[in-house]
Amino acid sequence: MRTQVGIVGAGPAGLMLSHLLHLEGVGSVVLEARSRDHVERRVRAGVLEQGSVDLLVENGVGDRLNREGAVHQGINLQFDGERHRVPMTELTGRTITIYGQQEVVKDLVAARLAAGADIRFEVSDVRLDGLAADEPVIRFRHRGRAEEVRCDFVAGCDGFHGVCRDAVPAGVLRAYERGYPFAWLGVLARAAPAIDELVYCNHPAGFALYSLRSPEISRLYLQVRPDEDLAGWPDRRIWDELHRRLETGDGWVVNEGPVLEKGVTPMRSVVVEPMQWRRLYLAGDAVHIVPPTGAKGMNLALADVRLLGQGFAAWYAHRGTDLLDDYSRTALRRVWRAQHFSWWMTSMLHRFAEDDPYQERLQLSQLRYVVSSRAYATSLAENYVGLPTV
Ligand SMILES: Cc1cc2nc3c(=O)[nH]c(=O)nc-3n(C[C@H](O)[C@H](O)[C@H](O)COP(=O)(O)OP(=O)(O)OC[C@H]3O[C@@H](n4cnc5c(N)ncnc54)[C@H](O)[C@@H]3O)c2cc1C
Picture 1 (cartoon, rainbow, N blue to C red):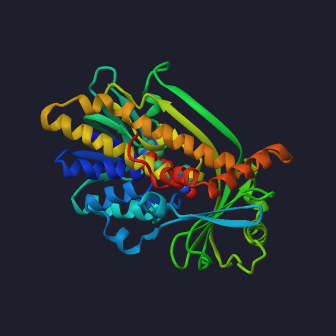
Picture 2: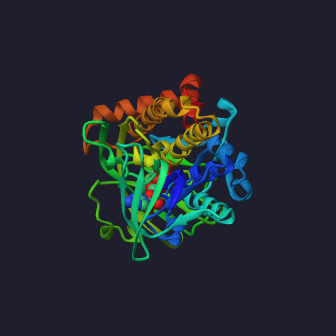
């Protein structure tokens, strides 16, 4: 089998890239380890920056997003028992949209299949060969048979635990990392959200986030230990902890409902540089991870492939190499801005040690400064809604 761009991974990055290439008349094959059903149900991120919404809408995959996405103009910061609103749209002129990552994936899969795309779900043993000779071949197994795709380029969009990054020889890539001494316990619940904008809460017992997916579905998070065992968190304990951290005693209460899904997500920051080696281009979680506090993961993945799509389009249109040559350098500017913002939000909102009163005072001072200074609030807001490439 031969194609122009072989894409590994059918997450937001791989699917969007395949769609953008199709619009430019460039062929691709997408290889995905999991089933279609699995990728369409995988609950992860849910905050789209305005630039991500624009990308989806302008490229014809935003109809349902426009109908069902909830446009938000602010977020709340809660600390010291008080809730303060950051009016993001007033400060920046931009908005965010709440629309689950699995919905983005469903829309992209539907658009690709309607256009006759070749997406192979449930492939295994994916291996990249021929990169050093600039003749990439992706070998894999599908329905019990060994197969291969020969291509001009490979796009490694296979997430942090994928195989593409490891196809680069040792010593070429450098990883920059930061670990955090906590994780998030995330809950999806059939409970009407008790507030229509997100609440980021710094609490002595640990961070909590009140978020939502639709008028009937709440998405809630609690800071827990990095090695937290879900078995120790029956639903009752989760709700009790959410009430304790999020309610301020003014009569507002967290609405309860059946828990549809729960899981523990480790927190870390990673950037791998450069994002390219020869004809292998890496995008999304395959080369960078952010803690979800800044809501940047899916947005970065989409921003990467926007650049990559333009680069491949220029190459096929007139053998233009400038955009592809600059891909890593350009993408990393946005990646590092998002890294800093995600680290900053994480540092300001979480408990880092059981008992560190000095740091707690610093966090509270910083939070109070953010909500009382228009300059500082604007800085938070413009990062949250997404900066143009810097
Ligand atoms: C558990 C979890 C929870 C998250 N929660 C949030 C959140 O609440 N808020 C937030 O902002 N961000 C969150 N994120 C981050 C966000 O979801 C990611 O940044 C986003 O999914 C990145 O998209 P991607 O396409 O780069 O990678 P992915 O979505 O990871 O897609 C990669 C795809 O590659 C496939 N794949 C992997 N290995 C192979 C292989 N060898 N062969 C073929 N296919 C392969 C995978 O199955 C997957 O479909 C979360 C991430 C995780 C892992």
